[in-house]
Amino acid sequence: MKSKVYFTPVGDSDNKETVKEKLKTLINKSGVLNIIGPGDKVAAKIHFGEEGNTGYVDPEFAGVICREAKVKGGQVSLSDANVLYRGKRTISVDHMKLALEHGFTRSVTGVDIVIPDDTKKDETIEVVINQKHIKTAKVGRFFMDCDSLLLISHFKGHMLSGFGGAIKNVGMGCATRQGKLAQHNSLAPAVYVDRCIACGACMAVCPASALTLTDKISLDTNKCIGCANCVGVCPTFTLFIDMRAGNEVQEKMAEYAYAVLNGKKNKAGFINFAMKINKECDCWGQENPRIAPDVGIFASMDPVAIDQASYDMVNKACKEDIFRSTHPEQDGDVQLSHAEKIGLGSRGYEIVEV
Image (cartoon, rainbow, N blue to C red; front, side, top):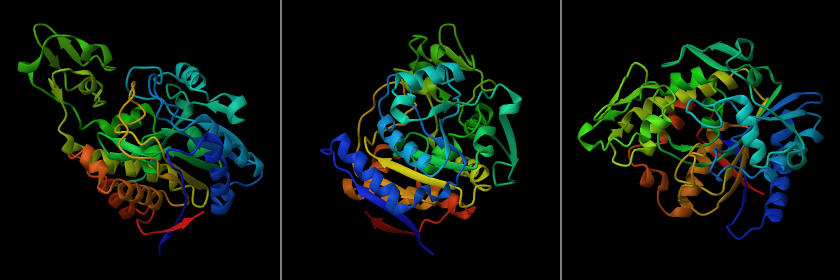
């Protein structure tokens, strides 16, 4: 049976007020917030963006969603989890400050921010799922304890998963730092020492102190957490990841999404923004190039269907598989097929344009 995916088109020329009105109509027509009951504790999971990056969902759009969720009677909080790499999203207090700097204030969104501190044991939980790669998932307790979960996702490209949407927002986004490590840990980079110019840029961004520099750089693979920060800053490609390992990351990501969503039957809703579609994830601490025109906003109760529909319609707008074109080593089909296989949702969908 095909899942319904509701869609409202958005063009590059649409102004913010027009988009907000379209978003309200989409929310009401799709019924995506009908998952919320009076008094429900609602976690609205979003990516607040890394410092130097502006690709994240606009705070005013998040505000439209959160205020509509409050109308349903929900006790709503915007939330994200901390990251592996060194930066302003590693520690909850700094992560919170960055979110506010990016405009996710209560005056704009109508709600407060909650960022679980996964250094505290009582803010984490282990979920037994016994899947192909992940037997026990480590996720933020806040996301498991909420009554309703709302995923607000920026649909874009990604160097390890081809694209990032609802599945990634749940699977990678709700994981603790240990859970993120479990998903990345097969990705230690190769080191081509003949290319090294001893600049030390990689050492400055390594969160695990896995790199040392004498005449040339060396990597301790026992310490490496596979975050790929070093790959992103190396000017000579001395450090480089075999991206074929990204297939395993995608499957692990889908299994983590299963861990979070399996206990949220009919209590999770998904909204994808296929706007400002960038080449890389919003975790990049810099602007990265847009690879597609604005397409629109999607809403569904099915995370697999909404990602498949978003993927298909962005590619249709580009008249090519733009995600494979920009990341030829990665095939986003891997996460979609594995997610469907483990029962996360259906790749079959019916578009309902509103």
